[in-house]
Length: 247
Image 1 (cartoon, rainbow, N blue to C red):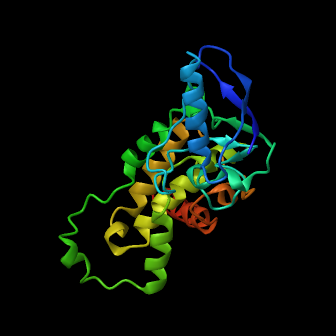
Image 2 (cartoon, one colour):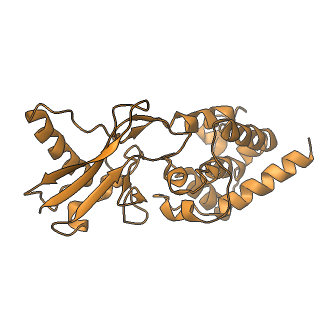
């Protein structure tokens, strides 16, 4: 398969970037999009040119590191799918593929397609944990949890913090990310102990990092590769209001 690529190249956040055209021929349809970029980089290295910088890790759709915008969609055109699980057979021979970095003020660009998403880590550090002693695994299993709540907590816990929800939002809001992290702890009895202080600290840190406000367009849930629902945002809003009224 042959492809015309337009890839965002930018040395760092201080210099201007631009889309650069590349042509690749003879690409196997079974290569993933990241493997296609590997082929491009091998070609660039042989030509003594600077390879394209992009984030990746597990390449199994688990870690969420492979965060980039493909043809205008964070992670690419397939719903519920991380970039690393997109294969070249999902495109047509001769297609033009535009690849850009996630764009948000809270995600400063490092180089090319790589951005700094540590703002999400700082939100977790602010309160996205359980500090009470929950005992060992055997102790935890002694606390009965309804199937309904355990399923909801598990779904919220699947958030990998990739930042696609931020990249697709017109306000660059991190509400879906924060809501998922709050939900997966608050739905379990071990997390209820700190529920009010947690939601206040995480939302405050989200605002400090420069993420925008949520306007309920729902684009975040549609772009999420793990299917985190807008129900988590509704839960976050209820928790935050309740905590604020008790201050």
